[in-house]
Amino acid sequence: MEIVAALKSGETRFLQEVIIATRNPGKLREIEAILSPFSLKILSLEDFPGIPEVLEDGATFAENAGKKAKTIARLTGRLSIADDSGLAVEVLKGRPGVFSSRYAGENATDQERCQKLLEEMAEIPPGQREAAFLCVIAVALPDGKMQVVQGECRGSIAFAPRGKHGFGYDPIFFIPEFAKTMAELEPEVKNRISHRARALEQLRLILPKFLSAS
Image (cartoon, rainbow, N blue to C red; front, side, top):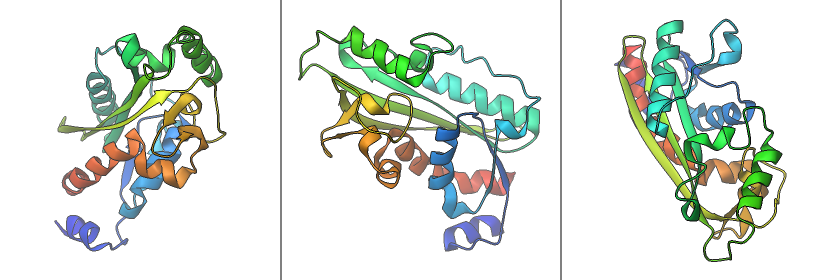
């Protein structure tokens, strides 16, 4: 309970290890920035090279995030946070969805994924290109206790990549509120309005009880 009280009061004298179950440096930077008020020692899967890849074979983002968080928590004996996120395009009936990172093949680059989606939507006119970035985050303890939260950011698919920030589909995800793609937003802006930011805001509400139990 002392840890919970310290977190709520803004004190930073506690430093607990938390594993972010990713090897994606862009994703890790975003999560570190948003969780910085907790003064945690953030580790990633790069700190555990012997841990095998967790097969993301779930039918939903929640299934994949939950499986990853529980597996990493069990293997490392530490509190673990995992996310599964992706892009859902309405006219494509939710694709690429859970296959977002593999949409252009297992080893495709971000540029190749964006290009494949743009080619697939080449004949789709403005007004029919609505899409949403979705993020589900799971936090799990080694004993199997777990909770899941979700965030969403709505926009549309641009006709060409724009911007140099971010990663993944950010260069082709247009946000009307800012009249910019996600990749044109400064990182501090993205970290306020992105799907991952919104999911992490929900995570921040439940994280203290997991920290006090770890």
